[in-house]
Length: 390
Image (tube, rainbow, N blue to C red; front, side, top):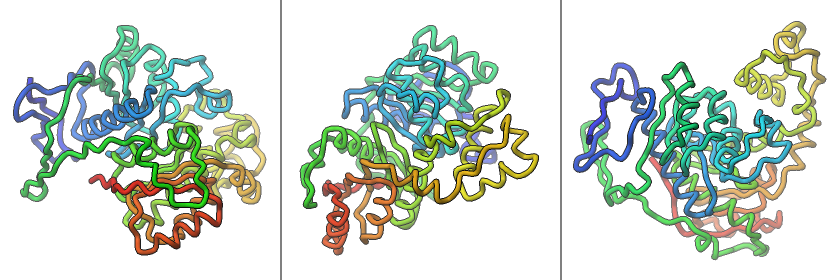
C-alpha cells in the first residue's frame, strides 16, 4: 500500500487529506484507531528523534510529542523512588523502554496532555501499561508484543491510535513540501549527532564528564526535531525544559528554563506531599500542581476550592521557599539550535542550574558569551552546526 486516507488535514475544513509515497510502499501500518494529519506529523518526527537517540546513546529512547515538537524526550534509565512518585509510576513498571517513556512524559506533564508517544524499540507490556492511564492520542514503534498490543487496544474504547513503522525504512535524500502552492525542496538533514561535536570546548573549564556528554547529545538530537528557534535543558538522560518555536533566543531560554524550574519544583517535599483525593485524575493533579508551584497558587488554595482536590488544605508554598528550592538544581546540560547572540542567555540559564552548554558558536559576541560562561564556571562547546527545524 502506498497511500493512506486521513480524516482531515490540520483542521476539519482541510479535505481531502492523505499520506502517500511517490514510489514504493508506505513504511507504516495502522494497527489501531484512525490517525490524522497532525498525528502522523508528530509520529514521524518523534520516531526519527528516538531512533537517533537510541543510535547515539545505545539506550532505549522515547519521546512525548505535541504539535510537531517534543514536550519531552528521554533514554531508558532506571527510575528513582522520587521519580516514580513524581511521574505517578508507583506501580512497579520497570522495563527500560517503559522508564524512557515515563520520564519523557514526565518532563512536562501539562504540555504532554494529549501527546503522541514515539518509541525506539518494540513496545513491551510494561510500556503499554505506562501508556494506558495517560491522556494520549497514539503511539508509534517498530513493533509491539502481543501482550502490549492487547493492552493498547483497550485504550479509548479501542480507538487509540497504534502505528507500526518499518525499522529498516530509509527515506530518500531529498524532501519536499508545498507552501501556498509552491514546492520547496532541500536535502534531508541526515547530520549524525555524536560526542565528536563536543570536542571544541571554548571555556576555561573543560571538564566534561560522560554523563554531561550523554545529556548534551540528548539535547542536540532533541533540538534537531524541535520547531525553531529552540533551546533544550537536559538532566540525567531526560529533557526537563523545551523552549520551542520562539522568535527570540532569550525567550527560548526563558521558556525552557521556566519549564526546567517547574520540573524541579515538582520534586520539592511540599509538592510530593500534596494530599490529593483518591478520585482526582492525573490531568487534574497535574494542573493543580502547576498552579501550586506558581504565583497563582491561591487559585487552588482559596476557601472551598481545595476541597475539590485535596483531603486537607495544603500549606502555602511561598515564593521565597520556591526560590530556595530552585537554587538546588545543578549540573544541567543545555543545547541551543543556533548561536547565542548575547550573554543574557547564559545569565538566565545559570539560574536553572545549567553547567554544560552546546551551541553552534559564530556570533560576533562569542567572546562576551564565553566570558559570561567563565564567570559561572560553565563548560561550553561550540559544535559548529546549526539545527533549525521548520
